[in-house]
Length: 243
Ligand code: SF4
Image (cartoon, rainbow, N blue to C red):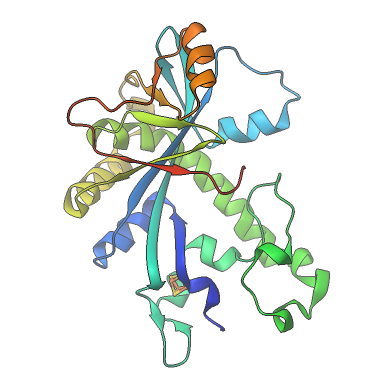
């Protein structure tokens, strides 16, 4: 209850959590990245399998990409749910999964490093005990499963919100700010659709700041650019960490 992790941060949300956040008058953005996916990686490529589970496939130029969409509640200063009198979360019982899991990592490819976390030194008194916590492991598994369940719903969400540009993974994210009312309606609609009846995914465009990458991926048939089309409204965010 130091409240440090509840300030100046970006909280990834599941589809259901994003709906609740918006219903509580919060703001949610979409962060989008893409892995060029010309052929299916080998089955023993665990990192690719992890990326695949939390993304959906989309055509891109004459090739394919895997699109990962993250719903994000970002804020400067304290979270709107943080009670600064006692540093308790006002929505503790229904706080986002990521909040419940912090400071452990959801990605199996990121090692927990206390130096990268905001927790004060005394919070690490339990040492490795945190990594053995069964409830925490169940929450991490639930988060990974929800990522998988939400992935295809997000393809419909992006189609409805006219979101079709993604940063090349590892380089950064394309961040879309959308009208909260429209986003809430689109999320509710996506959640109500039978996953078996989702529409065909429309073509996507890759975005990169790196000239060599634009050239090499373009030569492989991907549609890739660093220029906005008329009417495009998004921001490029450099990646801070790779996952
Ligand atoms: S929802 Fe609660 S736990 Fe999560 S950042 Fe906000 S105050 Fe902290």
